[in-house]
Image (tube, rainbow, N blue to C red; front, side):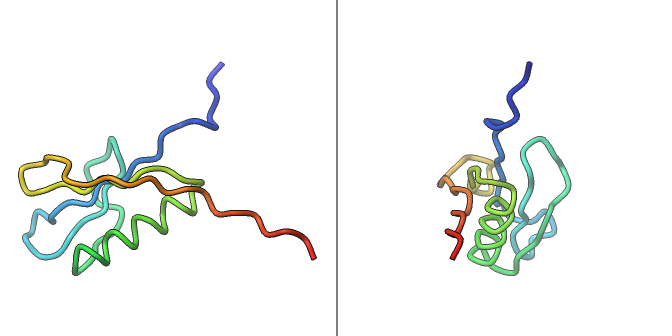
Length: 82
C-alpha cells in the first residue's frame, strides 16, 4: 500500500523558453504552473505553491538544465486554538 504522506512535491524554477522571465514547473510535467518576471518572483510563487500542498522542494535550474540551488519548504504550522 502506498503511503501518500511522503510523496515528493518538487517544483523546478527555470528560464522560460520564450526567453522572457522564469517558469515554475512541477516535476514530471512539461507546462509551467506559474510564470514570474524575475527569478525572485518565480521562487516566491514556487514556495507558496509548495507550502499550500504540504511541503516539498524547490530546485533552481540554469540554462543548461543543471541544478544550481535547491531548498526544502516545510508545510505550514498549525496555529494553536485560542
